[in-house]
Length: 375
Image (cartoon, helix red, strand yellow):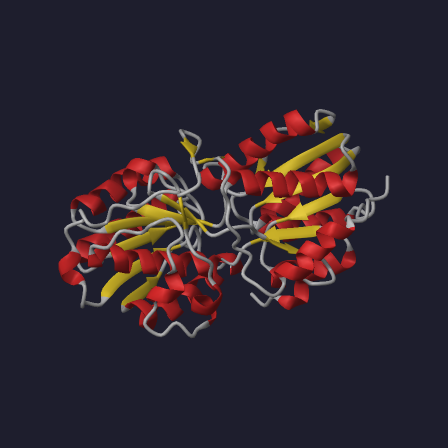
């Protein structure tokens, strides 16, 4: 079966999103790490940083450790740019460091070393496994270090706050609706993911599967999500196996920045670019060629640098003893405020708990507009 062409309205939405950081307001309920519901109602929430006890650092330069899941992935490498711009805007020093493999134990070891040095004010981390990281994050908090997450959530009790790109509901609906737009609402599909313990990926997938059961009951997920350990090579190998094991596949969702290129390569080599709808989640530079040759139909992603920039702002507020209200104007708080992220970032959406912030909706990239982004 040939893939369907995207509806005109979707194309219009993509064209608009090419010229703005796609961080529009969300007000609907969404899940957090899967343990409780995260609500974004009218009025939103408020962080309670006035009780942090660190207002005396208002005029000091803060040292922030930004730790991605793994070094080397273009998605996370690009996130560093948000920290670079934030240094002058919020009087912070950003250290960007992480493991060379997507390994939570390696993150723990690195964090222990940084904590032992005694000069880190804030940890901003994308956890590979929230439970494995819990003890070291608690140790950091006990020593007066602010703990944040970006992109991938940590457990609520282990953080002071954190930034997700958009709500769980938005991610789930965007990927499953886009796949159905391409393949139709019946048939076999499979999900490829990154690390098996990645909280954000697991939460998005679970929400997508529940959404599909209700809205698209004739879709058939042929197997549970296939983990690729944030490796494009492993994604290629497992996709090659899946294409042989499930010859009637009509749809693939790639729920990880490392997964898309490997899966697309396998689909292209199998000669199934016209038969299988593939929705990817990776950087525009990594997926551009696959969009152009048709092995990826749509790439859905966000600019991770905005999340790091927003977390640097929140660290400044925390150590200044200032609360953050729903709709907080990050750009207005920046000392300079003329850089790429300060001039384009949307206001923060703060959930009722005050722990979780979101920045809006994702970017939708197709073969015609992917060149509008460069990261």
